[in-house]
Length: 343
Image: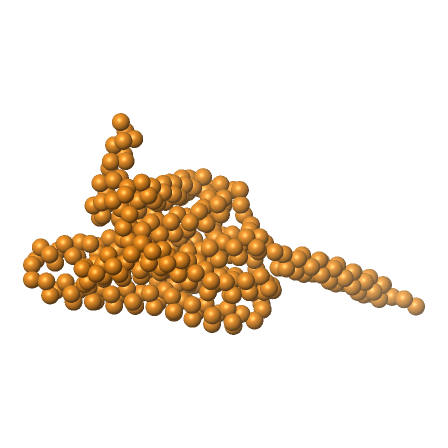
């Protein structure tokens, strides 16, 4: 004999079993979808979170900055190329710096402006690896050029009589090739290694462009080689370059203080002002971004995105302005170029 309570219990058990089955099915579908996203070869670029409605307005200053970066550095290259009196080691090195800054701007503008204009939201793994390769390679190249410019200033001030024999055009060309090789050859192993990692974490990047450390954060593979190699690379390039630049200015300062004439001291220091400003413009954003990654994890993602864009855009934007204002030869040729365009 069956009782009504038993029927109710049986029906409720069946209902619970059906709900459990549906939950398991939904969980399996969700797990499969997440797994598909995690194992896909595309990454989500990060813009200014929460300000999506203002992207058209935010894009205006960014477009202006990129236009100034491209036009300013192209103008410096044009002036140095077309003016025979500027065909000297110092200005060849300045041309290398301008070319590096120009390439840095070109390597990121399509993703930064693409996000703000709504054209780009994702980036493939291969494109991300290529972009990180050029960003880091160009950063190392800029550091190497600044170190070479410091050596140029040291020779010009401390050993002026031998300047033309030490820094010949052929030697500058060889130094340029060495800079390119040093900048892009040694970063190749860890960058290629990124291709073979398994990325199982959320495919959301921290910036509007790809960086090596950002991809490492998303990888579930063994990243010890890349981490240690990248650390050694930073120590023996950026940090070593900074130490050597400081040492060169210590030697310059010691040499200048020996000069009796106040006017000669002032003139010697003036030749170094542009380079000192370029060094500060390059190293301050790098140090700030590194400190933010290390100690600023509590900060909003928008602050990280803004600091990343400053790191990428500030040196290419400021260097043409610094050298146009502080270097008399460049300034006079720029003014002549503008006067020809006006008339």
